[in-house]
Length: 317
Image 1 (cartoon, rainbow, N blue to C red):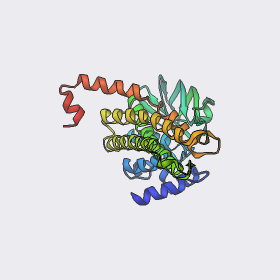
Image 2: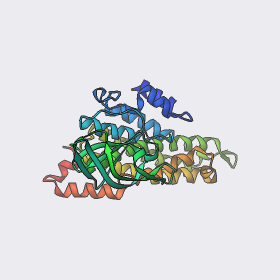
Image 3: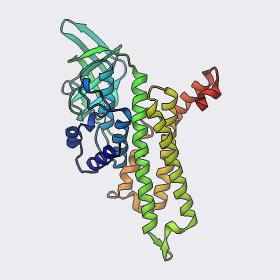
């Protein structure tokens, strides 16, 4: 695992990491080899995603991993190249030549950059060629593509009955975003601690002032608690309670971490060239994607109230 994390960090710290991610097989880490992936566990995929979050890498890594797992789960081969998954109301019509797909999907991550669209709906998982879709460019706060995709009778090169539905895509996407958030929070912590040790005020580093030390301790605590919850969910990805707790914790902590990091950095942290800006823009964007902390807290509340033994559910006993 240590070698994997080191390799992923080295690749993702580069200016254009995607070609090397594909060449090394890390773009499909955790996707079964028999489906065309690189094999390994979900923990391996999480290590790569965490590194992507840490380096604020502008690559469709989470999207490719999620889409690849959906295809593999339906017994379909996973194509090479960037992938993205979309779900919603899909009209799927079968004829002698296969399936055609019709539907409109909003805020699809990296649709314009994908080599293949993975469409989930109508009890199917199917692939579609982005070149045959109408794609309108959009973006999140961090400038990452979040596009509108319109399919109008687009032929699906591959399709199969899917054991997964929209809820599964939301759960997998939320877990992937939660992992990325923990990586970005760790980078925000590292940048802030370093800056507090270098920036001097009244003849000494600001990190020696008690008020700043308290802020750094709070930042570190938020990042650590979120990381613990997310790692637990990676070990139980099919447990909706574990994933809900992970995304709720990570999304909530993201706001606090970003606020403290910018408070310590002052105006420097919002400048175009400063790495903190790239990290916190993603914290603010990713915390809302696939459900923000309020949405997942609602899910947690519903699960707890519906449980025959709420205390056992909360404690895992």
